Image 1 (tube, rainbow, N blue to C red):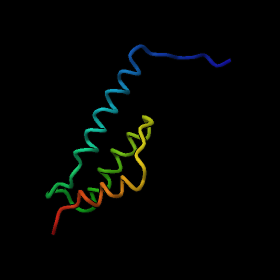
Image 2: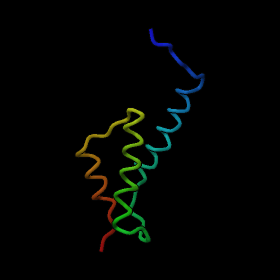
Image 3: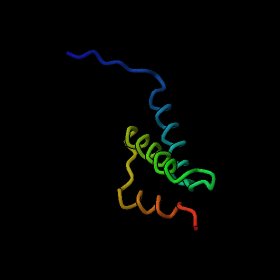
Length: 73
C-alpha cells in the first residue's frame, strides 16, 4: 500500500498555473528584442509547462502558433 499524500488547494494551484500558461500561450508573440535563438525556448517552456499540468495542444496547432508569432522581416 502506497500512502496517499494530498494537499488542500493543490488543484486550485494547478488550475491557476494552467490559466497563466494558457494566457501566455494565447498571447504569445515573438518580441522584437528577443533573439531568434531565445524565442523557441520561451515557447517550449510554455508548452512543456502546460503538458506537465495535462493541458495539451496538438502539435499541428502549436507549430502554426509558433510560425504565426514570428515577426515579419
